[in-house]
Amino acid sequence: MRRREFIAGAAGLAVAAAAGPSFAGEPVVTEVSDNGLVGKFYAWPAEVQRRKPAVLMLGGSGGGYPYENAAKALAGAGHPVLALAYFRGFMGGALTGLPAQLKDIPLEYFFKAIDWMKTRPEVNPKKIVLMGESRGGELVLQLGSMRKDLAGVIAYVPSHLRWGAVGPEGGAWTLGGQLLPYARDDYKPGEPLVSGFIRTLDGDPAKLAPAAIAVEKIRGPVLLFSTRADQIWPSTRMCQAAMARMAAKGKRGARDHIVYEDSSHLLMGPGPGITHFGEGAYRMEFGGTEDGTLKARNDAWARSLAFMGQI
Image 1: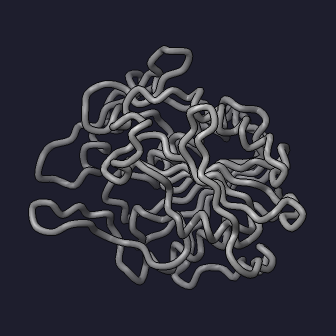
Image 2 (image 1 turned 90 degrees about the vertical axis):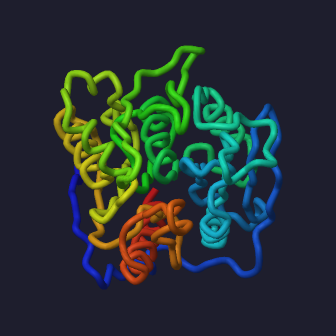
């Protein structure tokens, strides 16, 4: 079994070649609304696709669809992608069929998405990989621990715990109509968001235990990415906790954690990423520098493609 934590150097690694050649042109994009789902499916015709591993892609607390450039980049490398929206947030105001906020989201919604992917001729039903960022990273670890028919999990800046709803009080995830236990960050106005999460993690471990994700139950390989410069939440600390739990509880299979020193929280996808949003009193810091973020994103993306090339 391979289990390791790796500190990525500034130059990154030349692993992109493992992903294989990209396809020419543009993939076909299909709006998905079956069975209450809200998503976009990116794929080539089945006869061209060659049944490479497919990806269910999930975004974070911004809401709406995951990043289009990331979905297109995956599809361009030959991987069918279902980019799934699961609440509107401030990024998806037009998606009126979805909840407005990340609150009381039923995990059965994502189970339906996985089952839908299995019916597609472009998808090998035995090779579906979950990919998510931030709260979406938390989510893919949770889903991976519950579905035994998945081929792997790639989680960008995830959490090893379930956290509460974004904005209002309450929880984020339900199963069978029941709210799953969650932790709550100790946010205080005027300070970086990461500080409130750190205070909670520094609290009584017994109180956090019910919110822990059973990452050791993930059947396939796991690839985690984090950044020490994260100003949203302590992603490196939480990934280390996930790795420690997998080791302590005897998870089988590969599990890797790649740590970047100078990257933004927004790590998923190739090319430049943003280190802050807004200005003045409305400025949100994601951490890192522009150069560090660019290098980390490209390195992480190459590693993700190489990971899927081994499925």
